Length: 141
Length: 405
Image (cartoon, rainbow over all chains, first blue to last red; front, side, top):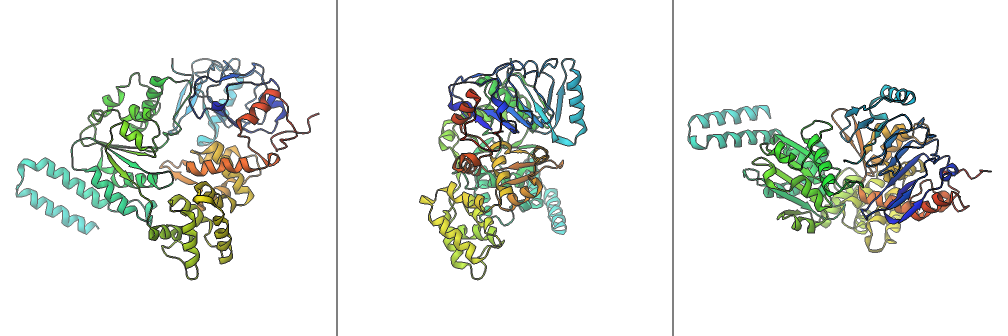
């Protein structure tokens, strides 16, 4: 699913919306045009599809991913310019694993990682080169 | 070559020792050094060997660049999408980059819009990415827009800004010629001539459509790997060339799709092309897409929608648990000129698809029956699905689990 939100004025996602799409693997939400504010309401408890491999959501409107979010299959997480403060509970953003356009690591840890996240990070590092990638910059303050 | 160089250098030394031009010695030495480098790089890198008409383009642009001049110059390469601006710019970069202290090919500008940034933030972000790349220091952080001048005003640089589509991008990366050291050259490629006027760029090379003769050569170079039609295909080649229009991208995609094909398959393509109105380029490119098998079509659409300009290994991981044969698929797409695989010196690869091909991919999805679709891109449909959390029988595509009780 590739969702260009520049053509819509407002959308409220239902909590169970993705429940009906268990096979959804690639989810991209972006704006092709800068046409002012789009209102997008994402419920805190929203269920993401569990087989998700790409989550590319520019300007994700909530402060954290839902607690049920399961990154087991996730290959790329790209949440540029998002409002994220926590990836999910216990993991602060700023935990940025940033294999950026240049393909070089720059990597900051601001805060203690939750156990599950640590496990996941080591999982990422053990893989070759850019087989997984996270970018979750918050907008510049 | 080496022998020739030796003689050349010896002549140079002799010439200098006579001190004919002592006053201008420094300039002379620089000129000679550059000439020697030119000799070493006499031919564009191998990627561009055989690209029809490239020498003529490069000659014209080099004369506009006026490389011996110590002023800083901004030169534009303008023309419609698919005419070959980026290819020319890459060849130019390969030819000239070694003459400069620093050089950089900036190739991801079009997608450089990020919501959440104001204009200042956007420019800072672009400058950061740009300087990280030019200075080869990853993740540079800068705090004001004078950073480019601070870092580059004493460096002779060659910067290519590829596919600029917003004035803001030029303002962020090359607002003043004083930002760069003497003798620097900035080359901008764009479809938008207005933007060049607005930024005060007067030196522009307009890439024209190829002549009939060159258009035929382009088609043949992809279809037969030689610049003239193979025996028995003369008329067919001319018809296809004519029907494709003269845009090099169209000729290259259709030519590649016909490689190794028999006469009757050529005739099918001619019939197919004859139905296209006004040589609409997306329809012409669609001929290339339709010639693919299902596996390659699926991969093509996923790259068009999700993975353009992505790392090759990342994309392979994305499909690691699916039935899709990515390695083979990428090979096919590359052979058919539908993607380019850029290979970096560290072994990384990047998949690049032309924007017109990407658009054609979107249109191909829109033309699919709703129950065939594997990718949803229609914003209205998506809104409906997300807001109602209900999937009407309209979408029976494989994304949805339509057996939900």
